[in-house]
Length: 315
Image 1 (cartoon, rainbow, N blue to C red):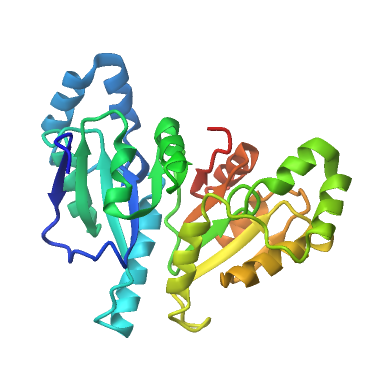
Image 2: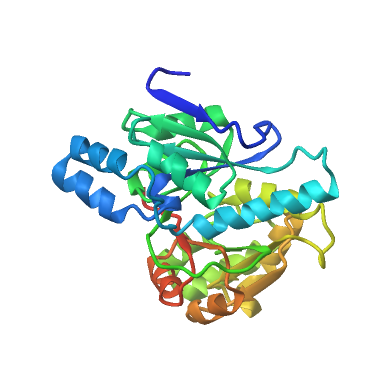
């Protein structure tokens, strides 16, 4: 490992095999609310920030947007191991931070305070910390920094931008909502829509109905999640997945459903919104995380208290 990265192994947590685990990397600002500390860093500099973190190292940080998602992921691990104690196909969480190890003590202490099963804390001094994602086998990266997310996507890692917000901690099971085009699927139909309008996009979908839609930036993560989902019957599964798409079910839903079937990706429920706001249905589902490429949909989700992660298509 390069000298720019310092990894702290959490010896209180069973280490997972990255070749079989679904490795999720989260930045400190995604999992904890560090907005005041980040403001201090921007206004007063790194030294003042480090002093503040060291002085408050025993004061737990408040939960951030991805906090409930990580808790729900732990619940899934617990249910999988109850079913099969030898199972290796588990979630594995690591924290990726631009903090120095000295100022990162507060991060480690906060994780311990909440009982978060984080296997590794990676403190990276290099500006582009995403260069370490693939070496750790990361399948999903959540960050509050757009540059980090774009770098990860360009490296072929499923990634999304988390906006800090006050969220309610939903109950288990783990509920994950995906948008369709430019998230699970490629943006090919979106491009046709931009060029030829709705009529052109509908015609394109009819012509291409028997051909699966191209892969989107979060397909790899969704497929691994689906693989874990298949370990359980539908009734007792600790994972529920949803598709909430702006597509209309009548004109553009068939190809989406056929694509999911072709991929072998199990989706518990699919909602074809035909351009209607997604907020009300998201409020009903109460997911632990919602992935979308449209900022207006992210805003609508935030308005109903749903933890949201933006998948930028314009990096």
